Amino acid sequence: MIQLQNEAVTVFQSALFQTTSTVIQTKEMIIIVDPNWLPNEIESIQRYVQSIQGEREIYLLFTHGDFDHIIGYQAFPGAKTIGSLALQNHPKKEHKLKLIKNFDNENYVIRNYPILFPELDIVIQEDGQQLQLGETTLTFYLAPGHTADGLMTVVEPLGLLIAGDYLSDFELPFIYDSAKAYTQTLEKSSRILEQHHVQLLVPGHGLATSDQGEMKRRVELAADYLERLRQSVIENDESALEALHHKHAFPSSFTEECHKENVRIMKRDYL
Image (cartoon, rainbow, N blue to C red; front, side):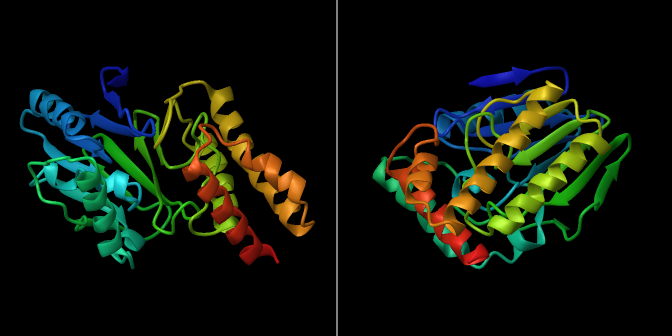
């Protein structure tokens, strides 16, 4: 479904995990962020892009290499691809592809394009790296923590922040890479919000927002959770850890495993 739409930005939201796919149109380009999940959802994005493309080039921007975010890669052949250096050098590419194939097989899903790991045309190696085409400027920021290959992108003059799997309205941090790096990425996101005067924030899961107070609340929500988790781990407070476990939205075996992984990585980083 379409969650949000204005003259320049259309945010599609999957039925699965409230995952977003954002289509951005400027005078110079069409940018598609993380096309996902189900075939009919990706086909809706394809049809929309075809209806607005005209003579503009298409760019595919990957916020990170989790399988739900790269699943629609080959649905847009010929698009120029953008991602981080860590995505290009991802150590578990075959594992990510196996997750896609397992998901499709378990759910009898048939796709009309091959399942491949993204090959990048434009590789982002450092904070502040930019891509400028005409009046459009993309400024990239490395965002490790959730995963090692995370990338945040500011699109100007739209004042749009593509946050990847950070700053959700409901989803607490899932740490697959580093708790320390996650905290640093949150601190960086605060600076990005201020320095770029962000007018619209789109997370990888959940609702986009144009409310400045809500953007700050999301940073604080994630930072508070990480600090409480860190203190609970340091103090070996099992009751506090259990309480944090129950703070996750949509409790399931998935969130239980994510909580265990959060605790494991926090212990690795701080004990």
